[in-house]
Image (cartoon, rainbow, N blue to C red; front, side, top):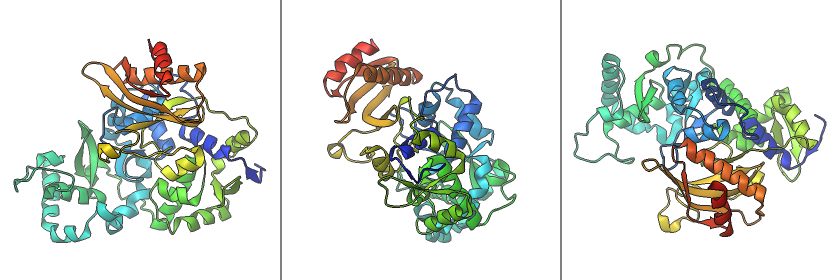
Length: 405
């Protein structure tokens, strides 16, 4: 790679290629493809909202097309994946377990995920939960009934639930599997017998996580590296610069960027192709709000010129776009967003509103691409009856409906 300054379009193209979102799958996905996609991303964020599909399943569908959602659960049960805190709560390749041990060994640094003062005050409860699990095996939070008369909620977890979460963050228990998407816990020595093999120091783990983040992002700033696996924001720039000085990463310049950018050697050929105008994205897909391509909103603005916010946690009157809005990716650009709901009982996929960016010019090819992506998404959900309620521009509704008929 010889270019001293890369065009601003190259990082966007490399991100999509690195993430497996640059083109449609060429064949029907297999279970091995599901694992490979997660290894490629490095982390698959978990979220429970399921008005369309729970996020991890949707992230995989955007890359793989139709696949059996049960494969993801099987991979966790088979110990090819594990759950822990990465970008947030994530499914991670089991081979990356050593990269997170330093977080488990020093859970006090995990913020709200581990309330050290609560743990100190409730040590007997943690010990009781751990002893119960060692004696009786797997448990769910639901296995422990509340005894204080309060309903359960995010902020009013019963003591056993808080104990399980503290033990999980400290790595003493792990998610053995999921049942109806609820985490099933067991002690780490049964879930992952090799949990203590070859532990890495925090410094070594941080270097490897930084390399993994750059590989997953294609071309990135140090700031975006820190966000990907939620690494220390103050230390990460120095770690990335050191990796570049050693030749493990390549420092590059991107037109219009005021800070250095970094390229993983695995992507040098792709970067050359993109700089020469020989790399083009053809994929059209709706993305989860928790997709790695868009989970860093600042990076999304820089790379795509796309302003996006997740509004499901806002009161309805304060929402601008909708409850659970899916960004629309088309041929290398984020061109719009869709607020939708899958009505599984009656087989109906409701598009509450589909909005294109003001700069996007409608065309027959664009409408066909959107209709195809929408039809595939709806059919995968088992809701083939697509009901488009509102669009912007308004004319799009009629032509889109004609394509979907």
